[in-house]
Length: 170
Image (tube, rainbow, N blue to C red; front, top):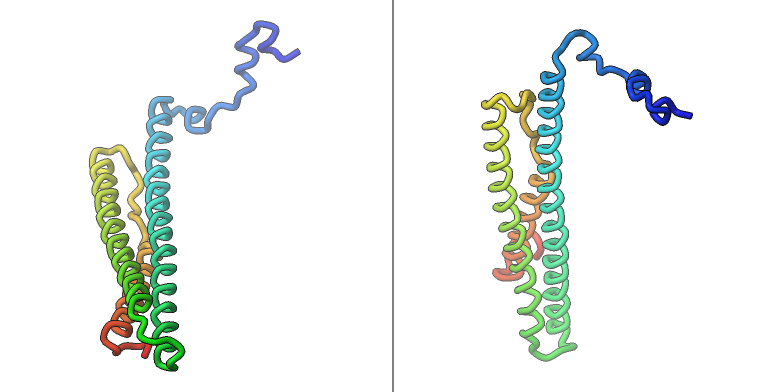
């Protein structure tokens, strides 16, 4: 029978290891504050990763809109050039609209991500200044944001190609 079942609570608690910081003489309150600070810092990192995941979702949807819109535009342009279809501006214009929508979506996603990360960094700095966080490292560069910006430039190139007949996709 376990010791705590027999009513000897102190015997059961003696089998629980004492944290190293307390064993060397640190006050339990200081250990608790330090652990809380670390958990808070990890929460900031988790929030940042969640913001990156949200931006990845925007990227995924934008890529789908841009690629499908560009494919529709090219398909109907080629079919019209080969005289397989008579003038069909509506599907072609719908493809162009999808490209515009995808580029607009990624631009808004980038702006939201930058604004959110700016607020998160400011909150983190305020907590560090108040002594609630001890980590001196900032957030590293978001590779998701870099990919989003590159996709935005690619989308702008697609817009130039379908709207004005210039650019890398002619």
